[in-house]
Image (cartoon, rainbow over all chains, first blue to last red; front, side, top):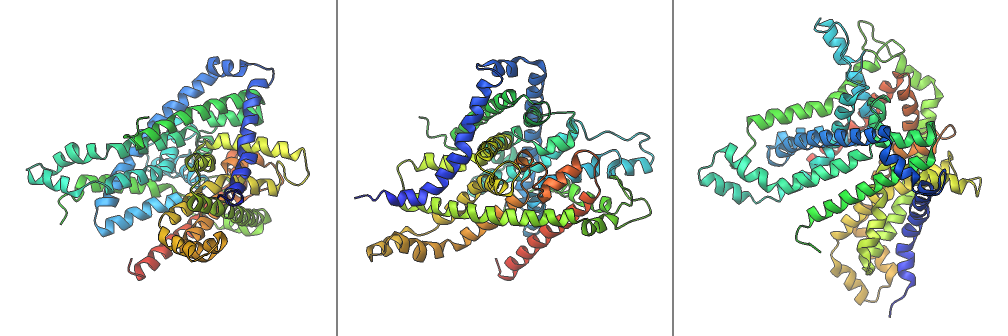
Amino acid sequence: MRNLSKPAILLGPLLVFLCLTYVVPFLGILRWSVTLPEPGLGQYQAALSDPLILSVFWRTLRICAVVTAVSVAAAYVVTLLWVRGGPVQRLLIEFCILIPFWISVLTRAFGWLALLSNKGLINTWLQSLGVLSEPLSMVRNEFGVIVGMSHFLIPFAVFPLASAMRNLDERVLLAARGMGAGRQRVFWTVFLPMTLPGVLGAALIVFVFALGFFVTPAILGGGRSVMIAELVYLRIFQSPNWGLGAAISVILMAGVALLMGALMRAVRPGDKS
Amino acid sequence: MRPTRPGLVASVLAALVGVFLLMPLVAVIPVSFTSKRFLSVPSGEWSLRHYRALVDNPEWLQAAGMSVSVGLMSAVLATTLALLFSLGIWMLRPRWSGALMGLALLPMVAPPVVSALTLYFFLISVGQMNGLVGYDSVPGVVLAHTVMVSPFAVVLITVALAQVDRRIDLAARVMGAGLWTRMVRVILPNIRFGVLSAFLLSFVLSWEEIGVTIFITSVNVATLPRLMWMGLRDNIDPAIAAVSVVLIAIVIAVIVARAVVRGVRGG
Protein backbone atom coordinates (compact mmCIF):
# COMPACT_ATOMS: atom_id res chain seq x y z
CA MET A 1 0.00 0.00 0.00
CA ARG A 2 1.29 3.39 -0.92
CA ASN A 3 1.22 6.39 1.30
CA LEU A 4 0.60 9.42 -0.86
CA SER A 5 1.76 11.99 1.66
CA LYS A 6 5.43 10.97 1.41
CA PRO A 7 5.93 11.95 -2.23
CA ALA A 8 4.01 15.12 -1.57
CA ILE A 9 6.28 16.17 1.29
CA LEU A 10 9.53 15.30 -0.49
CA LEU A 11 8.86 16.13 -4.13
CA GLY A 12 6.16 18.69 -3.59
CA PRO A 13 7.99 21.75 -2.27
CA LEU A 14 10.43 22.23 -5.16
CA LEU A 15 7.88 21.33 -7.83
CA VAL A 16 5.19 23.63 -6.43
CA PHE A 17 7.78 26.38 -5.97
CA LEU A 18 8.97 26.10 -9.57
CA CYS A 19 5.42 25.90 -10.93
CA LEU A 20 4.49 29.11 -9.13
CA THR A 21 7.67 31.04 -9.85
CA TYR A 22 8.54 29.70 -13.29
CA VAL A 23 5.98 27.62 -15.15
CA VAL A 24 2.91 29.79 -14.53
CA PRO A 25 4.81 33.07 -15.19
CA PHE A 26 6.15 31.57 -18.42
CA LEU A 27 2.57 30.93 -19.48
CA GLY A 28 2.01 34.59 -18.67
CA ILE A 29 4.80 35.53 -21.06
CA LEU A 30 3.17 33.31 -23.67
CA ARG A 31 -0.07 35.22 -23.10
CA TRP A 32 1.68 38.58 -23.40
CA SER A 33 3.10 37.48 -26.74
CA VAL A 34 -0.38 36.90 -28.22
CA THR A 35 -2.36 39.63 -26.45
CA LEU A 36 -0.12 42.73 -26.29
CA PRO A 37 -0.93 45.20 -27.72
CA GLU A 38 -3.81 43.36 -29.39
CA PRO A 39 -4.87 39.69 -29.55
CA GLY A 40 -3.42 37.64 -32.35
CA LEU A 41 -0.14 36.41 -33.74
CA GLY A 42 0.85 39.88 -34.94
CA GLN A 43 3.97 40.03 -32.75
CA TYR A 44 5.28 36.75 -34.15
CA GLN A 45 4.68 38.04 -37.66
CA ALA A 46 6.48 41.26 -36.75
CA ALA A 47 9.37 39.39 -35.17
CA LEU A 48 9.83 37.19 -38.21
CA SER A 49 9.42 39.88 -40.87
CA ASP A 50 10.87 43.10 -39.41
CA PRO A 51 14.29 43.45 -41.14
CA LEU A 52 15.83 44.94 -37.99
CA ILE A 53 14.80 42.01 -35.82
CA LEU A 54 15.76 39.51 -38.52
CA SER A 55 19.19 41.09 -38.75
CA VAL A 56 19.54 40.64 -34.98
CA PHE A 57 18.54 36.97 -35.34
CA TRP A 58 21.11 36.46 -38.09
CA ARG A 59 23.81 38.28 -36.18
CA THR A 60 23.08 36.13 -33.13
CA LEU A 61 23.29 32.91 -35.15
CA ARG A 62 26.49 34.07 -36.87
CA ILE A 63 28.19 35.11 -33.63
CA CYS A 64 27.09 31.90 -31.90
CA ALA A 65 28.45 29.78 -34.76
CA VAL A 66 31.85 31.51 -34.67
CA VAL A 67 31.96 31.39 -30.86
CA THR A 68 31.09 27.68 -30.89
CA ALA A 69 33.85 26.88 -33.39
CA VAL A 70 36.45 28.93 -31.51
CA SER A 71 35.53 27.66 -28.03
CA VAL A 72 35.29 23.99 -28.96
CA ALA A 73 38.60 24.06 -30.88
CA ALA A 74 40.37 25.86 -28.03
CA ALA A 75 38.77 23.58 -25.43
CA TYR A 76 39.78 20.49 -27.42
CA VAL A 77 43.48 21.38 -27.29
CA VAL A 78 43.35 22.25 -23.60
CA THR A 79 41.40 19.12 -22.72
CA LEU A 80 43.83 16.97 -24.67
CA LEU A 81 46.62 18.12 -22.39
CA TRP A 82 44.45 18.00 -19.30
CA VAL A 83 43.48 14.36 -19.87
CA ARG A 84 46.63 12.98 -21.47
CA GLY A 85 49.43 15.30 -20.38
CA GLY A 86 51.96 14.89 -17.58
CA PRO A 87 51.17 15.84 -13.94
CA VAL A 88 52.61 19.36 -14.17
CA GLN A 89 50.76 20.09 -17.39
CA ARG A 90 47.56 18.80 -15.81
CA LEU A 91 47.88 21.05 -12.80
CA LEU A 92 48.63 24.13 -14.91
CA ILE A 93 45.70 23.45 -17.22
CA GLU A 94 43.42 22.89 -14.24
CA PHE A 95 44.29 26.34 -12.91
CA CYS A 96 43.75 27.92 -16.32
CA ILE A 97 40.29 26.38 -16.55
CA LEU A 98 39.12 26.65 -12.95
CA ILE A 99 40.19 30.21 -12.16
CA PRO A 100 38.20 31.84 -14.98
CA PHE A 101 35.34 29.38 -14.39
CA TRP A 102 34.79 30.65 -10.85
CA ILE A 103 35.14 34.32 -11.69
CA SER A 104 31.97 36.18 -12.49
CA VAL A 105 30.95 37.00 -16.01
CA LEU A 106 31.12 40.73 -15.20
CA THR A 107 34.72 40.62 -14.02
CA ARG A 108 35.71 38.63 -17.07
CA ALA A 109 33.98 41.00 -19.47
CA PHE A 110 35.61 43.91 -17.66
CA GLY A 111 39.00 42.22 -18.06
CA TRP A 112 38.47 42.19 -21.82
CA LEU A 113 37.52 45.86 -21.74
CA ALA A 114 40.77 46.56 -19.89
CA LEU A 115 42.69 44.72 -22.59
CA LEU A 116 40.88 45.69 -25.76
CA SER A 117 39.34 49.13 -25.33
CA ASN A 118 40.82 52.25 -26.92
CA LYS A 119 42.68 53.20 -23.75
CA GLY A 120 43.25 49.57 -22.83
CA LEU A 121 46.45 47.61 -22.41
CA ILE A 122 46.88 46.39 -25.98
CA ASN A 123 46.23 49.74 -27.64
CA THR A 124 48.36 51.65 -25.12
CA TRP A 125 51.20 49.22 -25.59
CA LEU A 126 51.06 49.14 -29.38
CA GLN A 127 50.86 52.93 -29.55
CA SER A 128 53.80 53.41 -27.20
CA LEU A 129 55.81 51.06 -29.42
CA GLY A 130 54.84 53.17 -32.39
CA VAL A 131 53.13 50.28 -34.20
CA LEU A 132 49.82 52.11 -34.25
CA SER A 133 49.03 55.77 -34.54
CA GLU A 134 45.28 55.41 -34.06
CA PRO A 135 43.82 52.99 -31.52
CA LEU A 136 42.51 49.77 -33.02
CA SER A 137 38.83 49.37 -32.19
CA MET A 138 38.40 45.91 -30.72
CA VAL A 139 35.37 46.44 -28.50
CA ARG A 140 31.91 47.79 -29.20
CA ASN A 141 31.86 45.49 -32.21
CA GLU A 142 31.44 41.81 -33.03
CA PHE A 143 35.12 41.08 -32.51
CA GLY A 144 34.94 42.03 -28.85
CA VAL A 145 31.71 40.07 -28.35
CA ILE A 146 33.20 36.94 -29.94
CA VAL A 147 36.39 37.15 -27.88
CA GLY A 148 34.51 37.68 -24.61
CA MET A 149 31.92 34.98 -25.24
CA SER A 150 34.50 32.41 -26.34
CA HIS A 151 36.47 33.15 -23.21
CA PHE A 152 33.38 32.58 -21.09
CA LEU A 153 32.34 29.36 -22.81
CA ILE A 154 35.65 27.46 -23.16
CA PRO A 155 35.39 25.89 -19.66
CA PHE A 156 31.87 24.67 -20.46
CA ALA A 157 33.17 22.88 -23.56
CA VAL A 158 36.04 21.31 -21.60
CA PHE A 159 33.87 19.08 -19.40
CA PRO A 160 32.01 17.08 -22.10
CA LEU A 161 35.24 16.78 -24.10
CA ALA A 162 37.11 15.52 -21.05
CA SER A 163 34.58 12.77 -20.43
CA ALA A 164 34.75 11.71 -24.11
CA MET A 165 38.55 11.58 -23.99
CA ARG A 166 38.65 9.72 -20.68
CA ASN A 167 36.26 7.04 -21.92
CA LEU A 168 38.43 6.29 -24.93
CA ASP A 169 39.99 2.85 -24.81
CA GLU A 170 43.77 3.29 -24.54
CA ARG A 171 44.37 -0.05 -26.26
CA VAL A 172 42.93 1.23 -29.54
CA LEU A 173 45.63 3.88 -29.64
CA LEU A 174 48.28 1.31 -28.71
CA ALA A 175 47.06 -0.95 -31.48
CA ALA A 176 47.27 1.88 -34.01
CA ARG A 177 50.80 2.67 -32.87
CA GLY A 178 51.72 -1.01 -32.93
CA MET A 179 50.56 -1.29 -36.51
CA GLY A 180 53.01 1.42 -37.46
CA ALA A 181 50.91 4.60 -37.51
CA GLY A 182 52.78 7.78 -36.61
CA ARG A 183 51.62 10.15 -33.86
CA GLN A 184 49.96 12.50 -36.33
CA ARG A 185 48.15 9.68 -38.05
CA VAL A 186 46.93 8.18 -34.76
CA PHE A 187 45.49 11.54 -33.80
CA TRP A 188 43.76 12.36 -37.09
CA THR A 189 42.48 8.91 -38.02
CA VAL A 190 41.80 7.33 -34.62
CA PHE A 191 41.71 9.75 -31.69
CA LEU A 192 39.79 12.62 -33.30
CA PRO A 193 37.07 10.48 -34.95
CA MET A 194 36.55 8.53 -31.72
CA THR A 195 36.07 11.71 -29.67
CA LEU A 196 33.77 13.29 -32.26
CA PRO A 197 30.58 12.57 -30.24
CA GLY A 198 32.11 14.57 -27.39
CA VAL A 199 32.90 17.39 -29.81
CA LEU A 200 29.30 17.39 -31.01
CA GLY A 201 27.98 17.44 -27.43
CA ALA A 202 30.32 20.26 -26.46
CA ALA A 203 29.36 22.25 -29.57
CA LEU A 204 25.65 21.93 -28.82
CA ILE A 205 26.09 22.96 -25.19
CA VAL A 206 28.17 25.98 -26.15
CA PHE A 207 25.78 26.99 -28.91
CA VAL A 208 22.71 26.74 -26.67
CA PHE A 209 24.42 28.75 -23.92
CA ALA A 210 25.61 31.34 -26.40
CA LEU A 211 22.13 31.90 -27.89
CA GLY A 212 20.70 33.30 -24.67
CA PHE A 213 23.76 35.32 -23.71
CA PHE A 214 23.06 38.75 -22.39
CA VAL A 215 25.73 40.29 -20.19
CA THR A 216 28.91 39.81 -22.24
CA PRO A 217 27.45 41.09 -25.54
CA ALA A 218 25.86 44.03 -23.73
CA ILE A 219 29.21 45.10 -22.24
CA LEU A 220 31.62 44.23 -25.06
CA GLY A 221 29.20 45.01 -27.88
CA GLY A 222 28.52 48.40 -26.34
CA GLY A 223 24.98 48.56 -27.73
CA ARG A 224 26.21 48.31 -31.32
CA SER A 225 26.21 44.61 -32.08
CA VAL A 226 22.97 43.80 -30.31
CA MET A 227 22.18 40.12 -29.87
CA ILE A 228 18.80 38.56 -29.38
CA ALA A 229 18.84 38.51 -25.58
CA GLU A 230 19.77 42.18 -25.40
CA LEU A 231 16.97 42.95 -27.86
CA VAL A 232 14.52 41.39 -25.39
CA TYR A 233 15.92 43.61 -22.64
CA LEU A 234 15.59 46.72 -24.83
CA ARG A 235 12.00 45.88 -25.81
CA ILE A 236 11.02 45.39 -22.17
CA PHE A 237 12.83 48.29 -20.52
CA GLN A 238 14.01 50.90 -23.00
CA SER A 239 11.59 51.22 -25.89
CA PRO A 240 8.79 49.17 -24.39
CA ASN A 241 6.94 46.76 -26.58
CA TRP A 242 6.24 43.98 -24.11
CA GLY A 243 4.36 41.82 -26.59
CA LEU A 244 7.31 41.84 -28.99
CA GLY A 245 9.83 41.14 -26.21
CA ALA A 246 7.68 38.24 -25.07
CA ALA A 247 7.29 36.86 -28.61
CA ILE A 248 11.06 36.96 -29.17
CA SER A 249 11.58 35.14 -25.84
CA VAL A 250 9.12 32.43 -26.85
CA ILE A 251 10.88 31.98 -30.19
CA LEU A 252 14.23 31.76 -28.40
CA MET A 253 12.86 29.22 -25.90
CA ALA A 254 11.46 27.10 -28.73
CA GLY A 255 14.77 27.18 -30.60
CA VAL A 256 16.68 26.13 -27.50
CA ALA A 257 14.17 23.35 -26.79
CA LEU A 258 14.70 21.97 -30.31
CA LEU A 259 18.48 22.07 -29.86
CA MET A 260 18.24 20.40 -26.45
CA GLY A 261 16.14 17.66 -28.02
CA ALA A 262 18.89 17.16 -30.60
CA LEU A 263 21.44 17.06 -27.79
CA MET A 264 19.50 14.31 -25.99
CA ARG A 265 19.42 12.32 -29.22
CA ALA A 266 23.16 12.80 -29.70
CA VAL A 267 23.89 11.61 -26.16
CA ARG A 268 21.73 8.49 -26.51
CA PRO A 269 22.16 7.42 -30.14
CA GLY A 270 20.87 3.89 -29.43
CA ASP A 271 17.48 5.20 -28.35
CA LYS A 272 15.71 5.98 -31.59
CA SER A 273 12.11 6.15 -30.46
CA MET B 1 54.60 4.65 -20.64
CA ARG B 2 51.91 6.24 -22.69
CA PRO B 3 52.39 5.95 -26.43
CA THR B 4 50.27 9.00 -27.10
CA ARG B 5 51.48 11.81 -24.87
CA PRO B 6 50.50 15.09 -26.51
CA GLY B 7 53.26 16.34 -28.77
CA LEU B 8 54.95 19.72 -28.99
CA VAL B 9 52.32 21.27 -31.27
CA ALA B 10 49.50 20.36 -28.90
CA SER B 11 51.45 21.69 -25.90
CA VAL B 12 52.16 25.02 -27.58
CA LEU B 13 48.55 25.44 -28.68
CA ALA B 14 47.26 24.57 -25.21
CA ALA B 15 49.69 27.07 -23.67
CA LEU B 16 48.30 29.74 -26.00
CA VAL B 17 44.75 28.94 -24.93
CA GLY B 18 45.87 28.98 -21.30
CA VAL B 19 47.31 32.47 -21.78
CA PHE B 20 44.07 33.53 -23.48
CA LEU B 21 42.07 32.25 -20.49
CA LEU B 22 44.15 34.07 -17.89
CA MET B 23 44.93 37.23 -19.89
CA PRO B 24 41.83 39.33 -19.04
CA LEU B 25 42.22 38.49 -15.36
CA VAL B 26 45.82 39.70 -15.32
CA ALA B 27 44.92 42.80 -17.38
CA VAL B 28 42.65 44.03 -14.62
CA ILE B 29 45.59 44.52 -12.24
CA PRO B 30 47.46 47.42 -13.91
CA VAL B 31 44.20 49.17 -14.80
CA SER B 32 43.15 49.15 -11.14
CA PHE B 33 46.17 51.31 -10.24
CA THR B 34 45.43 54.13 -12.68
CA SER B 35 45.32 57.63 -11.26
CA LYS B 36 42.70 58.76 -13.78
CA ARG B 37 38.96 58.69 -13.40
CA PHE B 38 38.40 56.66 -16.56
CA LEU B 39 39.59 53.28 -17.74
CA SER B 40 43.27 53.67 -18.64
CA VAL B 41 46.69 52.18 -18.14
CA PRO B 42 48.84 54.02 -15.60
CA SER B 43 51.93 55.58 -17.17
CA GLY B 44 54.49 56.50 -14.56
CA GLU B 45 52.24 57.37 -11.65
CA TRP B 46 50.44 54.55 -9.93
CA SER B 47 47.67 55.30 -7.53
CA LEU B 48 45.60 53.51 -4.94
CA ARG B 49 42.67 55.91 -5.22
CA HIS B 50 40.28 53.32 -6.62
CA TYR B 51 41.00 50.93 -3.76
CA ARG B 52 40.55 53.87 -1.41
CA ALA B 53 37.14 54.49 -3.06
CA LEU B 54 36.06 50.97 -2.22
CA VAL B 55 36.63 51.67 1.46
CA ASP B 56 35.43 55.27 1.50
CA ASN B 57 32.31 54.83 -0.57
CA PRO B 58 29.83 52.89 1.60
CA GLU B 59 27.96 51.75 -1.55
CA TRP B 60 30.46 49.01 -2.32
CA LEU B 61 30.52 47.51 1.17
CA GLN B 62 26.74 47.71 1.41
CA ALA B 63 26.43 45.96 -1.94
CA ALA B 64 28.82 43.23 -0.83
CA GLY B 65 26.80 42.81 2.38
CA MET B 66 23.59 42.64 0.35
CA SER B 67 25.10 39.98 -1.91
CA VAL B 68 26.20 37.91 1.07
CA SER B 69 22.77 38.00 2.71
CA VAL B 70 20.87 37.33 -0.52
CA GLY B 71 23.35 34.54 -1.29
CA LEU B 72 22.96 32.90 2.13
CA MET B 73 19.16 33.03 2.05
CA SER B 74 18.92 31.70 -1.50
CA ALA B 75 21.48 28.99 -0.78
CA VAL B 76 19.55 27.81 2.31
CA LEU B 77 16.25 27.79 0.41
CA ALA B 78 17.63 26.18 -2.74
CA THR B 79 19.59 23.51 -0.87
CA THR B 80 16.59 22.58 1.30
CA LEU B 81 14.20 22.33 -1.65
CA ALA B 82 16.76 20.45 -3.74
CA LEU B 83 17.60 18.05 -0.91
CA LEU B 84 13.96 17.08 -0.33
CA PHE B 85 13.36 16.72 -4.06
CA SER B 86 16.46 14.63 -4.77
CA LEU B 87 15.77 12.39 -1.76
CA GLY B 88 12.22 11.93 -3.00
CA ILE B 89 13.40 10.89 -6.46
CA TRP B 90 16.03 8.55 -5.03
CA MET B 91 13.96 6.90 -2.29
CA LEU B 92 10.51 6.76 -3.86
CA ARG B 93 11.54 6.35 -7.51
CA PRO B 94 8.27 7.84 -8.81
CA ARG B 95 6.96 6.79 -12.19
CA TRP B 96 7.57 10.10 -13.93
CA SER B 97 10.98 10.78 -12.41
CA GLY B 98 12.49 11.74 -15.79
CA ALA B 99 9.85 14.39 -16.44
CA LEU B 100 9.97 15.65 -12.84
CA MET B 101 13.75 15.96 -13.08
CA GLY B 102 13.34 17.87 -16.36
CA LEU B 103 10.99 20.32 -14.68
CA ALA B 104 13.40 20.78 -11.76
CA LEU B 105 16.28 21.52 -14.13
CA LEU B 106 14.28 23.86 -16.39
CA PRO B 107 15.73 27.17 -15.08
CA MET B 108 19.23 25.83 -15.74
CA VAL B 109 18.68 24.87 -19.38
CA ALA B 110 16.35 27.68 -20.46
CA PRO B 111 18.11 30.71 -21.98
CA PRO B 112 19.00 33.12 -19.14
CA VAL B 113 17.09 35.98 -20.74
CA VAL B 114 13.89 33.92 -20.88
CA SER B 115 14.29 33.06 -17.19
CA ALA B 116 14.92 36.72 -16.46
CA LEU B 117 11.77 37.84 -18.26
CA THR B 118 9.75 35.05 -16.63
CA LEU B 119 10.90 36.03 -13.15
CA TYR B 120 10.27 39.70 -13.92
CA PHE B 121 6.70 38.77 -14.88
CA PHE B 122 6.36 36.69 -11.70
CA LEU B 123 7.58 39.49 -9.44
CA ILE B 124 5.48 42.27 -10.94
CA SER B 125 2.38 40.04 -10.77
CA VAL B 126 3.06 39.03 -7.17
CA GLY B 127 3.94 42.61 -6.29
CA GLN B 128 0.44 43.72 -7.21
CA MET B 129 -0.96 41.35 -4.57
CA ASN B 130 1.24 42.21 -1.60
CA GLY B 131 3.75 44.79 -0.45
CA LEU B 132 6.54 42.47 0.68
CA VAL B 133 7.58 40.31 -2.25
CA GLY B 134 7.77 42.08 -5.57
CA TYR B 135 9.84 43.81 -8.20
CA ASP B 136 12.96 45.49 -6.79
CA SER B 137 12.60 44.00 -3.29
CA VAL B 138 15.03 41.85 -1.31
CA PRO B 139 12.61 38.90 -0.85
CA GLY B 140 11.90 39.04 -4.58
CA VAL B 141 15.59 38.81 -5.44
CA VAL B 142 16.03 35.94 -2.96
CA LEU B 143 13.16 33.99 -4.56
CA ALA B 144 14.45 34.65 -8.08
CA HIS B 145 17.99 33.57 -7.17
CA THR B 146 16.57 30.45 -5.49
CA VAL B 147 14.82 29.55 -8.75
CA MET B 148 18.02 30.04 -10.73
CA VAL B 149 20.40 28.12 -8.43
CA SER B 150 18.20 25.25 -7.23
CA PRO B 151 18.76 23.13 -10.40
CA PHE B 152 22.51 23.14 -9.70
CA ALA B 153 21.86 22.01 -6.12
CA VAL B 154 19.60 19.23 -7.45
CA VAL B 155 22.36 18.06 -9.80
CA LEU B 156 25.05 17.97 -7.08
CA ILE B 157 22.85 16.20 -4.52
CA THR B 158 21.60 13.70 -7.11
CA VAL B 159 25.20 12.92 -8.07
CA ALA B 160 26.04 12.38 -4.38
CA LEU B 161 23.00 10.09 -3.96
CA ALA B 162 24.01 8.04 -7.00
CA GLN B 163 27.09 6.96 -5.07
CA VAL B 164 25.16 5.75 -2.01
CA ASP B 165 24.85 1.97 -1.76
CA ARG B 166 21.13 1.20 -1.86
CA ARG B 167 21.68 -1.84 0.36
CA ILE B 168 22.35 0.27 3.43
CA ASP B 169 18.96 1.90 2.96
CA LEU B 170 17.40 -1.51 2.42
CA ALA B 171 19.06 -2.81 5.59
CA ALA B 172 17.66 0.09 7.58
CA ARG B 173 14.22 -0.53 6.12
CA VAL B 174 14.33 -4.24 6.88
CA MET B 175 15.26 -3.45 10.48
CA GLY B 176 12.14 -1.35 10.72
CA ALA B 177 13.34 2.23 10.23
CA GLY B 178 10.70 4.62 8.92
CA LEU B 179 11.15 7.06 6.07
CA TRP B 180 12.38 9.93 8.24
CA THR B 181 14.82 7.80 10.23
CA ARG B 182 16.27 6.38 7.02
CA MET B 183 16.60 9.87 5.59
CA VAL B 184 18.14 11.60 8.57
CA ARG B 185 20.19 8.85 10.17
CA VAL B 186 21.17 6.68 7.21
CA ILE B 187 21.22 8.60 3.95
CA LEU B 188 21.98 12.15 5.03
CA PRO B 189 25.29 11.27 6.75
CA ASN B 190 26.36 9.57 3.52
CA ILE B 191 25.70 12.57 1.30
CA ARG B 192 26.76 15.36 3.64
CA PHE B 193 29.62 16.47 1.38
CA GLY B 194 27.29 16.58 -1.60
CA VAL B 195 24.83 18.72 0.36
CA LEU B 196 27.62 21.01 1.55
CA SER B 197 28.92 21.49 -1.98
CA ALA B 198 25.38 22.13 -3.20
CA PHE B 199 25.08 24.86 -0.56
CA LEU B 200 28.43 26.41 -1.50
CA LEU B 201 27.73 26.33 -5.23
CA SER B 202 24.28 27.86 -4.65
CA PHE B 203 25.86 30.65 -2.64
CA VAL B 204 28.54 31.36 -5.25
CA LEU B 205 26.05 31.32 -8.13
CA SER B 206 23.75 33.73 -6.29
CA TRP B 207 26.72 35.88 -5.29
CA GLU B 208 27.65 36.41 -8.94
CA GLU B 209 24.15 36.30 -10.49
CA ILE B 210 23.58 39.25 -12.81
CA GLY B 211 21.46 38.30 -15.85
CA VAL B 212 18.24 37.90 -13.87
CA THR B 213 19.11 40.54 -11.28
CA ILE B 214 19.24 43.24 -13.98
CA PHE B 215 15.63 42.45 -14.90
CA ILE B 216 14.20 42.39 -11.39
CA THR B 217 15.89 45.30 -9.59
CA SER B 218 16.18 49.02 -10.21
CA VAL B 219 17.20 51.23 -7.28
CA ASN B 220 16.28 49.58 -3.98
CA VAL B 221 18.25 46.38 -4.16
CA ALA B 222 21.89 46.71 -5.22
CA THR B 223 23.84 43.49 -5.11
CA LEU B 224 27.56 43.68 -5.85
CA PRO B 225 27.23 42.50 -9.49
CA ARG B 226 24.32 44.91 -9.97
CA LEU B 227 26.47 47.82 -8.76
CA MET B 228 29.33 46.71 -11.00
CA TRP B 229 26.92 46.51 -13.94
CA MET B 230 25.86 50.10 -13.41
CA GLY B 231 29.49 51.19 -13.35
CA LEU B 232 30.24 49.25 -16.54
CA ARG B 233 27.44 50.41 -18.81
CA ASP B 234 28.07 54.09 -19.37
CA ASN B 235 31.30 55.61 -18.16
CA ILE B 236 33.54 52.79 -17.13
CA ASP B 237 34.46 53.36 -13.50
CA PRO B 238 38.01 52.11 -12.69
CA ALA B 239 36.77 51.25 -9.17
CA ILE B 240 35.40 48.14 -10.89
CA ALA B 241 38.98 47.16 -11.68
CA ALA B 242 39.80 47.37 -7.98
CA VAL B 243 36.71 45.30 -7.08
CA SER B 244 37.68 42.78 -9.75
CA VAL B 245 41.21 42.45 -8.40
CA VAL B 246 39.82 41.73 -4.93
CA LEU B 247 37.34 39.15 -6.30
CA ILE B 248 40.00 37.44 -8.41
CA ALA B 249 42.37 37.30 -5.43
CA ILE B 250 39.66 35.57 -3.36
CA VAL B 251 39.00 32.96 -6.06
CA ILE B 252 42.71 32.24 -6.58
CA ALA B 253 43.27 31.93 -2.83
CA VAL B 254 40.42 29.42 -2.51
CA ILE B 255 41.52 27.35 -5.52
CA VAL B 256 45.17 27.26 -4.44
CA ALA B 257 44.18 26.39 -0.86
CA ARG B 258 42.04 23.54 -2.17
CA ALA B 259 44.88 22.25 -4.35
CA VAL B 260 47.30 22.41 -1.40
CA VAL B 261 44.89 20.59 0.92
CA ARG B 262 44.37 17.93 -1.72
CA GLY B 263 48.14 17.62 -2.23
CA VAL B 264 48.79 17.26 1.52
CA ARG B 265 46.16 14.55 1.74
CA GLY B 266 48.02 12.81 -1.07
CA GLY B 267 45.16 12.94 -3.55
